[in-house]
Length: 486
Length: 93
Ligand SMILES: [Zn+2]
Image 1 (tube, rainbow over the protein chains, first blue to last red):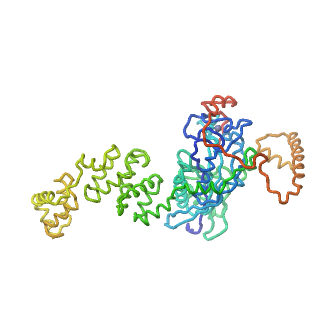
Image 2 (image 1 turned 90 degrees about the horizontal axis):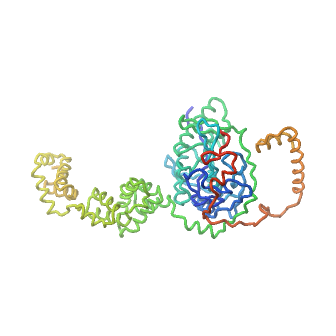
Image 3 (image 1 turned 180 degrees about the horizontal axis):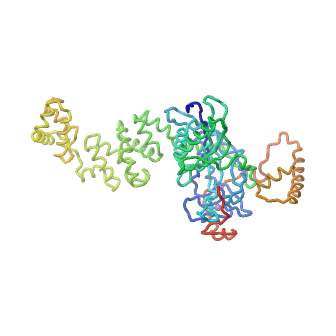
């Protein structure tokens, strides 16, 4: 039976750690990589009598994320206890939100692998506290618990089961991460655990409306692994159904080393969390004016930026994608555009940012925003290329020099002798010399060999140590040798 | 309350109850449920739900760090510790 006989139905649960200074309900630092149990207090270790106090900035970041995802923001929000036992959960319950989450329904728009625009509904996005970390040293009879992570604010973003392929899941995650990073809600760094993802998946006959029995996959540590694990799980479910069996509702874990999913726990063992309102925390109000102010402070979102770059600046789509992948890069480019003179070369600047400046930042391992090179200087350099003062090659050198010191572009060009020879008389003499010295090549060219012209241009470039303006050299050669290709 | 429910609650609470304890707990829970049934009989038509008996609306705090507890202070309350961590019986996923 072909793969098209079934379609898959995928929903994702994403947890992101919010970029606050302190934890959700206490003033312990929210930092990654500290020594075990050094950012702890009586609240986040669950000592008797300790009471939680909500971090207002965490609430604001939750709203910001909700607005970036087009969610309906609750006017009143409250917290509930989710009860279960695990050594990394010191109170025996996690403070979460069941009945009145900060964010209700929203949606996320992205382009799928077939180039189609997709809109995936967000069911909800609620605040909760992170658990601690349990380590299981090899061959040990004990487990070790570090509570630094316990109480770090999390936003759980639950999608509706609207995704249809593993590739769509990958693209949804990429777009979600991009938006959350634009909104400066979270670093969304999977390696540091500030973004985590669980996937729900089922299959059904193509075109059916009823949902099949789903499984949940955990232990997904990269977007690629989400995609791979889903592909394997869909294959496994399809094989089960085709052999006449039925899919069992269960939680499965992804074994990256073995490229397969395996059962973690079945539905019978599933937890009953016995949620109830947390009596330690009151309700919180999200006044309309406050939400409006948070909305007004949101930056232009990447899809809007991309459309503007392509539509009104005439930048190629692929370049616009690179520019908008990261908010810092896009804002750096926006600053360039602001510095451009009327009718300036936005496309040339975009190419310089994606082709040279981002590579420079990458080589140094810093954000583009932290370079010494400024957008204004880059615009000057592009102007020098456009008016023929320097070549594109030389521009790379100038940009690197600008980032290493405090000189003006013209000073660098002068100091390194990078100005092109664009003077016809000065270049004319060299062109004559090259023609005289390369009789054989000249003959080839006159005989109709176009490539011979490139060799002659190369000769001029060599004779001028790369300083000749190549367009002008080509023009002068053609003029002297009498038209193109003999 | 039936014995099956008592077993389920005991399992969720990680309590290992012998038969005597189960019978005692069952009687206690029945009394508690009876009290709540009385509450459930009250006519609350038109009364908005109350989630909290203190301040109706909370005031969040600023996102400012405070001095928490030292590791030694916190771990002093733990039955067993090692390498700056709580040491617990091995748990396997
Ligand atoms: Zn704390």
